Image 1 (cartoon, rainbow, N blue to C red):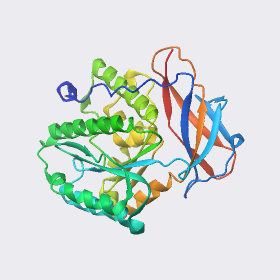
Image 2 (image 1 turned 90 degrees about the horizontal axis):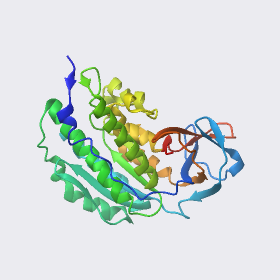
Image 3 (image 1 turned 30 degrees about the vertical axis):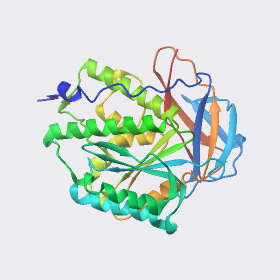
Length: 337
């Protein structure tokens, strides 16, 4: 028997925070180019790039190679005390502090921290290059990270999902007030996907999910935010669960194809141009690798296509005319008539 979740969705599926409208005639992309394994590659030229919109080549209207010295990237380090287990959350905090204290506490990019708990999301209001000071600040969250009061079972899973999506909305809204490129380093196994044969969605719910997918896509693009999901469970997690999100990373074109997993942390990370990484014993090292993505990148603009209908999904692909190099950017956008 399928499980109707209309009540569970009542507070979850609210409209994502609206952003200031962007220029509809221009879309900017931050493109990271790397070998299959390694740090970003600088020194490429515009003629090395081909931009495809729904498999159709589009002219690049502007091109700029950028590095961290020209345009510092703001990093928000997020610790998930809602979806991380009681025992694992202490380890996560230690690894976060290890990352902050590396290189004698000298951080590569201006960094802030945020902590998500059952009581809400707390964001440090200022950014700093002093990792030692941020690590000391993180000590103040020790008690709050362990105050778990939610329900269990499907109701608890729904509650965790509501808290988590609310946190994403709050942090994205905050990031929209900051200039330049932002990177969210979200240490979390992800929130419950609430998907499968026992979860039954009606047409109204699918319409609302689609609306939220479009809203988050616009918000992340207009706020210039990329999400990096670092799963601290690593091999301890069931492999089928860890890879389940991969079935949902393709952009959604119509409401009838939606699923609650389309709003999962992992899916949103991939679609924002970030990464999903896993490791139970080297979270600090993974965080360093994520920050290495901010060493250099390429800023491209193009003219988005006109749509025949509202919220028409367009897939973006960047090809590099150099063997062995891979380009990563946002998965796509929703065009309007």
